[in-house]
Image (cartoon, rainbow, N blue to C red):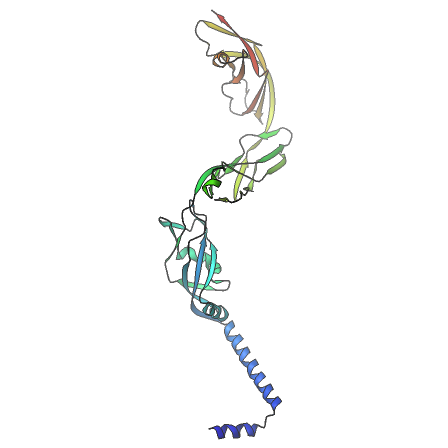
Length: 323
């Protein structure tokens, strides 16, 4: 056999340089063959070790340990070869709280149906998952110190002429869960939003605003929705008498002045006379506990369509007489 090979090589009559060219050509041909085959798609089982991230109420946002997820996939040869050589890579995947179902204690799970939308994060782009080997994947999220605190909006709104808010500045959610060490949580009584600024407002305002970060503290939400109703108004001024209420039997309470000027801001367009069903009163109970001998003048209830009222003077002097 050796003699036959030797005679074959002699018959080819190749020089040293020819040998180099031949070997280089063979290497190039093999490389092209390998690249071509690795670029084709094949069916194979791919595995990945997953560290789950999720805002689970009352628990750590990172799973303790890893969970292996294996699926039959269709992928390019490059991907399959890389997965085999790496011995199963590790991926950090952030799951939506809506797909992370509580199983028992600190254990939560994700079903294979929900895993499909995270396939590109698990195995990379260009990989098609045919099916997962396990119907359910489990993760453990240890319980951590936490408490619920209100969200305090920080805002500045300037209105166009004859426009104003007809309600409060609301945020949704109006409270969030904060996580941290006990000594850190002691000092956290609320969470503030980033400043919201609107100018020349003539319609309802709404949007999304981020929450201010607190060093060493994790929040259950990064942002909140805000909204406030805005309406056009008209001002109606009128002088009205001041009535007295809760005066004990056998006594009479006199007020000075006996009438005040009231400015009502009403929703435009005005449908009815707003002063028809509103009364402004001075309460004897408030006068009895007052050191100044005065009490505030207030409307018992503002009619529908009245946004606010302003009374001048805001307080009246009171004198008690026996009847």
